[in-house]
Length: 78
Image (tube, rainbow, N blue to C red):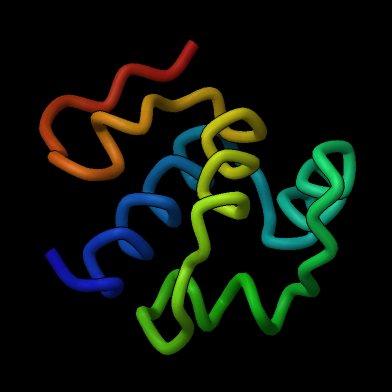
């Protein structure tokens, strides 16, 4: 799987939670990750690598599973 697929899934999860990139930026800060909106956009478009510690924070902030980000399938967001 390439970084574009990870990014697409993270964007899908963000939109399903009705969050803006700015909202994700703020949420990630709670987990010690300091990314700006430009960087989040690059991750979502597959233009920037996603590091494991960042992925862990995205998973928590967006309330998604690592399995879904990696494998895809049905997205269940509460």
